[in-house]
Image (cartoon, rainbow, N blue to C red; front, side, top):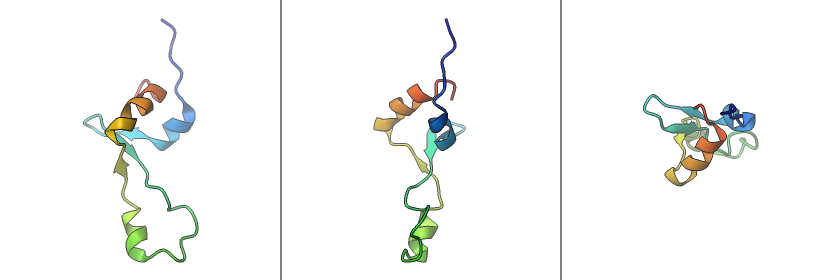
Length: 65
């Protein structure tokens, strides 16, 4: 069997936890932060789990994750 290629864009955005779940970064934290409240920005710092319905698509993009 030939080796499978990894989607490099996905590899930069997702990583796996110790239990095999996929972690992502939260959106809306890159710019236009001046009018967002401190509480909102603080909540966006934590990483989030990829939803179970999207997990299969991410795993196809990252075959060796």
